[in-house]
Length: 195
Image (tube, rainbow, N blue to C red):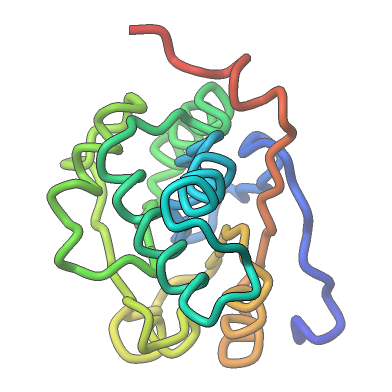
């Protein structure tokens, strides 16, 4: 059955991901805004531009400066987990059925050290997972096609918050079941792992 007929499943917790037993399973999971969240990033960076640069969204350089500030913010401010307990539950089930989870992020590979640090900050041991970096020059659908071997895998699940990435995966891999992660606002705080 083609994913053209199967809509993307919208979830707000990783516990909603259907993990089938007796299937060779691979879960590909995004990082930013799917498990990592920076709740004040947008507001802070937009206010910073307004107060320091003294211009608004209509200026031609606004988007470039905003993207740069967001990257700096994310390197300095610790993230919180979008759904810590749901993620732990999903990982436990994946391990019980001998499945595998890999991260697939649009970050560049040069961010590997701070990506691993941020995963540790939310209680995820990055040594337990393979992390793939697609960067901004390749869609996640093409990255999977070129770099992730799906031979022999019976059940592939893709979890992301970004519609464009989900569409790229569905277009090239109709056999992959896609989930769109939309965390509820209160989940960011109620599921934060206490240190």
